[in-house]
Structures are given as structure tokens and as C-alpha cells.
Image 1 (cartoon, rainbow, N blue to C red):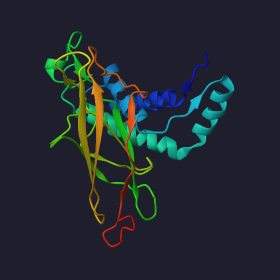
Image 2: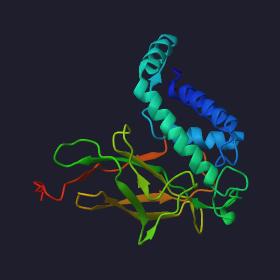
Image 3: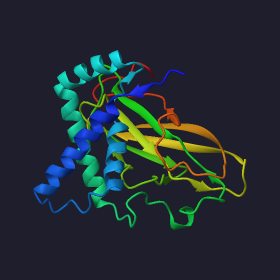
Image 4: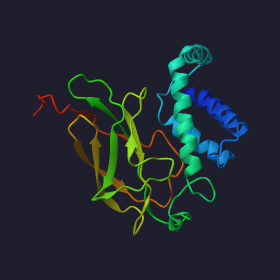
Amino acid sequence: MVKIHNIMEEQVITHVNELYDQVKAKGAVWLTCDCENCRLDTINYVLNRIPPRYVVSGRGVTHNNAVVLADSQLSIDIDRFALEGMKLVSASKRPYHKSTLDVSLQDTSRTPLFNFPTFTGNVYDGSTFEALTDVELVLKLGDEKAVMIDSGWSNPFKTFAGSNGSFTFWVAPIRAEKEKENRDFVFTIEAKLSGYDPVTYSFDVPIVSEIKDRIQLNSVYSLKTQDIFMFRTDVVNELE
């Protein structure tokens, strides 16, 4: 079987560990913990916000590593996301530094749950098709703001420069009455940016409950939402 590998994992792991060591050495007051679990949370945070680079051979590893090392903007983006992730993880009041799941869901060995995929998407200018930064996005489940699986996952979420207008949400599991229960969940994304008309986008997600949790990040278990296009308040939306 051919093994596919994302070489960005090594790059991110190296950057995150080096940054933790540097910040710790400087005695930053906001760094409340630098344990292995906190570092892993930060690594996951960064990997979920940068494009992967997949290889299947040693030659591919060598070539792509050279490309990555030569990409100074990518290194800057990794460091920026790493610092942001570190601050979010450090600010989280997590007694065991892994998850802020509801206490009632921490022992899920025999609990039927609705486990949600990570939701990813992009926000663009509707006229120029350029990625937008500083867009505030709120994910709602029904009429309420959706609870994230971990405090390292922001809701609201703001898009950043260099990330192609991408956003990511990961909703915490919800207890089900029984295993293999079918249920449709209605989510809404509200997007706001100064100078642009606000956008609301709704989508349905059918989920089947299962007696296991999915509290470890898995890039395969994700859902790409519809791209969001925003129009400036002084530009006529030709799609209307």
C-alpha cells in the first residue's frame, strides 16, 4: 500500500516547539503551560490552518522540503498561527490541557454521541474574487452560537492574511439517546466585515450517532462548506 504523508507536519512541529522554547526562555507571563498536550493542541491548530503538502516517496520529501524551506511567507504564516494558537491554548482553562468538553461527555466509552466533522470554507470578495481578511464569522446551531470542541477553536472566527480567506470550525459532540440515531442539524454561518454587506449562509448536516468520540483531529472527517462571497456596500451585487 502506498503511504501518503503530509510533510507540513514536521515543519509545523519544529516551528511550534522552537517557538514554545523561545517564549518560555523569555519568561512571557501569558504562557501558562508548555506541556506536551498544550504543544500538540497548538500543532493541530496550525496544521488545520495551512495548506498541506502530500508526498509518497523519498524524492518527493526532498523536493517538497526544499520548496517549503525556500518559502519565507509560509514560514511567517506558520509562526503567526503558532503564536496565535499558543495564546489561545494558554488562555484556555483546561484542567488536563486536552479538551474543554463538557464534564458529562468526558467519559464517552458507552455514550452515544453525534460527532461533527470539522467545517472548513473560504470567504472572497464577490467582485474581485480575492480572499478577504478580518472577516468575523459566527457559526450557529439553530438559534444559538455553536459550542466548539475546544477553546483553541474560535467562534467567532476571524480570517487572516495569508490563509486564503479560510475559516475552520469544530463543534463539540452532542449526546444522543441511542446508537445509530439519525438526525439532521441545521447550521448557519454569519459573516461580517466593515465596508461589506453581511452574509448569512445555512446548511444541513445529517449525522448518525455512534458510541465513540472523535476528539482527535482527523483531516479526513471534514466538510467543505460553500464558499462565501461578500460584496462591498458601494458595489451592486450582480448575482441578485
